Image 1 (cartoon, rainbow over the protein chains, first blue to last red):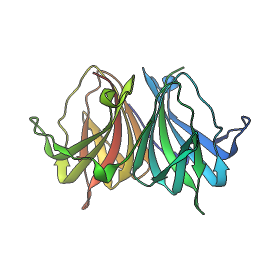
Image 2 (image 1 turned 90 degrees about the vertical axis):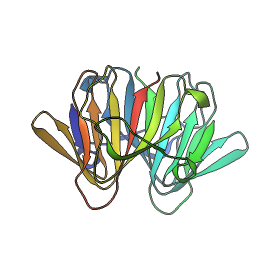
Image 3 (image 1 turned 180 degrees about the horizontal axis):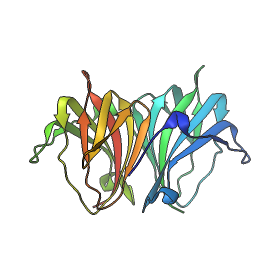
Image 4 (image 1 turned 45 degrees about the horizontal axis):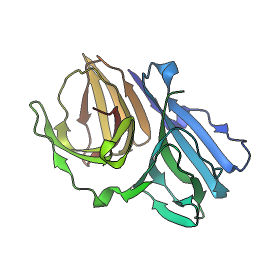
Length: 112
Length: 112
């Protein structure tokens, strides 16, 4: 069993192209003995966003705080506290902070 | 892509032996096209708890609200908003509400 608090986990700034103001914390991973999937928390600053991209794995996200959106093509789906979203493998997507405070969500992905 | 709000998902009361005051909402599952894992939300009422049990799959949980604990043998690990926990396959565990309000957490498990 692993028990922790998000405040005790060091964030890593994401410097990938197309990213602005995004920090990520890996809470639970294979290194902790998790056999199948990885639990991360993303903090997106006001005006920030993840890259508009696609990949071969899914996201399952749950919004903890703030106001944001997930963009796909010309559509933006609003996200707020207690929203959830599934992005299936191969879907283009981008998460954006649309508010004045931090936009925070958990995001589960399969292990590498 | 699937986007939703937890307030729009109907809860199912868990009636398994050893359970008291527990509601579960399945937010994202295979039925939505999720290929690998299932995102659920648990609401445990004050005085409530999940069964003390073990199973062949893991839990990755993130606490959204309230004050609780995860019990294993004689040990109880406190959980509060923004705590997280990994229960690996085969570990005995029980989640308990230790506060006066609802104890709410997300719990990801592999698909059936």
